[in-house]
Length: 589
Image (cartoon, rainbow, N blue to C red; front, top):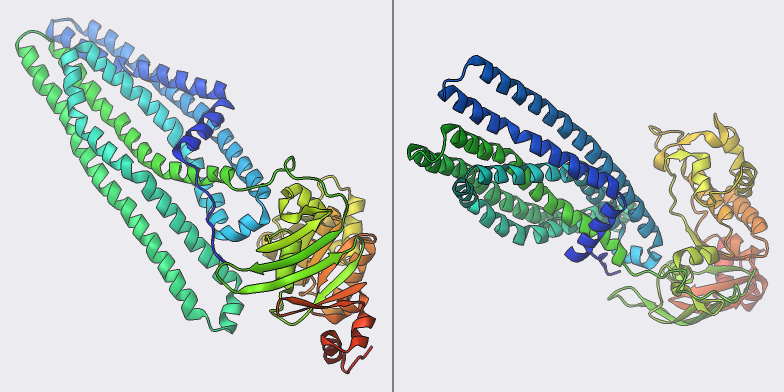
């Protein structure tokens, strides 16, 4: 299957998203700006008062004048410290609230993505965006954003103070900062693309590692170790090159900046000394201007560090915000199916550049029917189930429910119509109750126990120390809570399906991890619970076909037989051969 990367937001979209987040908490953002401005204004008093002390001493003033000015300096410094801490506190709270909104939007957008979009993009890209990228954005909102505001205000006020003392000294200071301006422009032209490439390479590494780890047994069985190692090395080499490039940008940017810090102070001392020698400026004013520019180094250094960090976080935010541009079908745009009938008409399908795996399949699934789809491995059963569930769209032909293309339904509407359950499952970190309420948040305890009983899981859940309130480890890890084995995790997944209550349920080897006795009990229990609903079972165990209303036989991407179990056994075709080999003899029953 060919990979299709999720979109990345452009700079205009990122700016709009940033403004939208600010508007949602305007009061806090305004308070951060006001407190930072007040702290910066208070901080300007220090160098000016020190210059006054120097001038007072040179003028012959006594100790009392120096003590008075020193006391004012201490008060101003204390007030500045309190205002700065208050500004950081408000800024961090603003950042945490904004980060919460970013996380919530990311989850909402992820859940709204059509299944085929997620399948094409791969889990690695979403994982990297939801973890590393969101964490980078969070660090920026919590730390870099407030710090950048604080230091930007301080920088402007300090530079303004130098111009206030003497416009010529202010111009000298600005001229000394020009090398920083030029290297900053050079850096910014290259940084965003560099960090976007680094983020994409990181996603590719995550995707390859996740796919290799989850398919480790398949890799070993097919002796694909060398191929997977080679693919991993290629992805890691690409990631290394992208990281070395961004490192190169930083290694040019920061040394130039460090050298350039010296120029404004040196220039002001040189020109200020000449002005003082000519009697144009007092020594105190020259010292105050030099101190202002020396203080300028701190905020400017922080601004440049944060600007560098903003390039990384801006690229991360573009990847997070990019989900807003992913293709989706809203509930408002998709028509409502007229009934529960599923029609597959002349469906063909091929994976990417591979050969065609379905060759003109026609099938009608009647509402309330139990249909079993059987056939040898590679016959196209799983592919058909993915098309029926709207995970993939057919290359040609149509798959409709109630006359509406399945792939045209919005995610929420699709889940109410068709649910695909595979042998893949997940145990979420939380209690048994939490794991079940995901499917139906409004369900009461009685409904939860009924769902567990329907899939034969109520027995072991009642034996847990706290029943429904017993904590479960994520994916069954004992370190996080009660350990669940494969069959228990699968029963929880099936119980969620019972609670979701769709009109059509597709079981693609959903009971593969259960022993035959438990599997048959679970399937029959599900059939009883879903009475009047459509069940399509992709079956390897032919007892499922025996219990079905009709059986569809897939061979080499074609639907070759369709009928009841008795009709197909009597016909003596492919299904009869499968039944005979599985049941111990021709036509055995």
